[in-house]
Structure formats: C-alpha cells, structure tokens
Image (cartoon, rainbow, N blue to C red):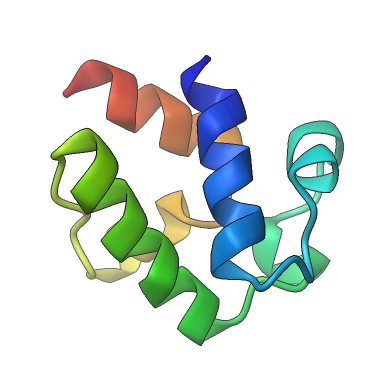
Length: 78
C-alpha cells in the first residue's frame, strides 16, 4: 500500500508528467521518467507531511527519490 501511495504522490508532485502507473511499473529512475528537481522537492514535502518521516536532502537522500522501491522501504522502516 505504501508503494502505491508513493506512486500517487510522484504523479501529483510531477504534475502528472509521471503517472502513478509509470512509477510503479517502470524499472527506470523516476528522474528518467520525468520527475524534475522541483517535483522532487514537492515529493519530499508530500512524504514528510503524509508519513511524518524526514527525507535527508543529501546526495543519498536524493537518490532515494529516484527509486520507488527504495523509497517505499525507507518510509516503511520509519
């Protein structure tokens, strides 16, 4: 359920340039699908607001935002 909700948040954060279905089914990084740096910041805000977890904006934290599976694991572990 978390992964699906994160995919919806990706779609919202990208103004639907990346659909939730694309985020779920594609093996490509989210940035390769069209998630921009502005979209990443919107996604961070959405994740922090909805799940109450802090996403570190270091290189490692930004890498999480490019991989839906890793991002879901991160959120689930918090």
